[in-house]
Length: 628
Ligand SMILES: Nc1ncnc2c1ncn2[C@@H]1O[C@H](COP(=O)(O)OP(=O)(O)OP(=O)(O)O)[C@@H](O)[C@H]1O
Image (cartoon, rainbow, N blue to C red; front, side, top):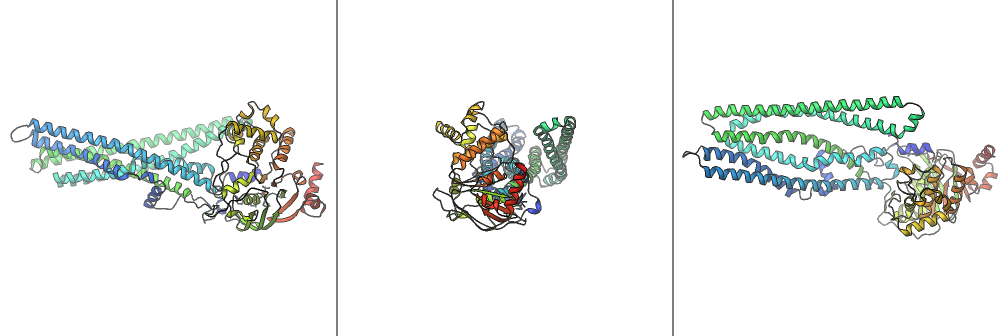
């Protein structure tokens, strides 16, 4: 695989190359709101666990709050304005009752919060884990249909948008509705006319909030975009700092960042002004409603329809009404956000795993590996066929070099042999067993792919090499990422591996030997050194079949010699398929396979093919002319 191919894979695949049959990760699921909530709870059942108890407690809290106006009314009408004069005992009793109800409501509300946080966090953790696991289970082909950054954001940011709603929004929506119903019921008992006045007066408030929130929402979307653009500009400038300096464009880059920061500030300020305006309008209207209630209520009272206690209780009830109306509209907003986030995560989790393990998959004994391709055809999703019936029989313990023009299909063959994807037609077999029938554990134990640029994790040389001593996983595409405890035995095994690969002197020259930190993605090592670590990792895995994508990056002559020596030890006595970018590799192999435009054009030992009058002979002759 060339760097160009690598680049394309690391970013994205053009839209028109993607199919609709599940090989791609959809940007969002097309479930409706209720279906999304149901599927969300199905994926993370913890969210709904104990929900009825929580709901009961939340209802108690709501009812507790409604007891206060009731007690106030009784205190005034029956206690203070009693026919026989104020009754202190009754007032005290009613006041204690109200206080008790408030304490109970407070306790219930606290309990509700704790329960909601617990179940929400448990549910969201499950959602994250399931989404991450599923991303690993998807074939690399499916993964590549989404930008890596965006995929990470799906399991982090998008899960966060769900969290606020799950933590309190959902239950609060129910409780707010309940509070509105109970308050309305009580108001109706006191005065149907005044209740109608309250409802009518609240309509403008509801409309203002809805209207305002539409703008607030838009403003927030803009803020999110601007923040994203700002972070993008900053991270690009940090990652590309060397290029920025080398080309003397610091000032231009600085101006771009300043502009992005200013845009963000402006959008944030605008959104806050809108929030304040909406909120203040809500408060203003609710105060106006209170004033209207006082006026209309007094008039009604004068007419003999309402007692003083009932009027005061009514004012309390109006306030119990305002909060939920304001909150409910906000929660509805959050619900929209949450559903959007949930849909994006669900789309990841519900993407079918194309390279899956069969329930009756077989396990193979270790041993010399024979690879057979039977009339293998392959097309990338929605793309043209790139392998047109490849048939090959690669004997065990043979060093095979696959050569061919760029884009001829060499990497595609390597991905099929390691089952990173399955053929569109035909079969790939390992010792006579179709790879699709083989258990992943067995496959990953027997076959190891060494890519051009082996990925190094942020850690020491020791830890990175020890990934080779993997714990076998049961996942299709999961690389050997389970780190093995770096115990004394591990250290000894890694030391021995480096020694057997002839690399002890190299390790000894590292600043901290095996404990040298490699930096993020191995940045503290040179490209050649990273290859050495990747070779040691593959050596520790001791596979029966090695599939090597030869590195094309130029390294210094001393490292080149080291790599060649280490590769000799790594490949000795095992079946090896190398995607050879250098013809010197083909010269040193037992068998050369020439791939030409998706066909196997020639197969044979180097000497034979070089002497014949074919593609390989021409490639070889021009290489010799250029290099010798
Ligand atoms: N992920 C992909 N999606 C769509 N088409 C692809 C993808 N990867 C490769 N192809 C196409 O498949 C064909 C074979 O590609 P492949 O990477 O196997 O070639 P290669 O011989 O390994 O080339 P190179 O030596 O440049 O790595 C090319 O036409 C390429 O454009």
